[in-house]
Length: 78
Image (cartoon, rainbow, N blue to C red; front, side, top):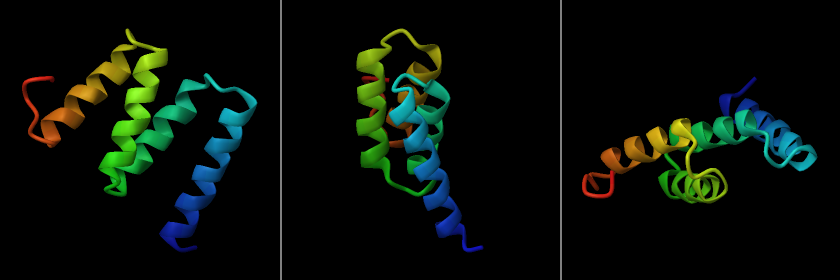
């Protein structure tokens, strides 16, 4: 099966999981990683910002935010 098709199916499944349980962090994390791996940096940043508003002290998301800012060469906020 084509990689893009598999990614779309996985994304659909994760989105369905979030529809059933909106705070299911493993699904949020996987969707975020899929955005990053696909080069959708803007989408990943928006998703991460929304997650940090709901979970401001989550170390996993804080670390990802620092990594994202580093990749974007925004060292000040990181």
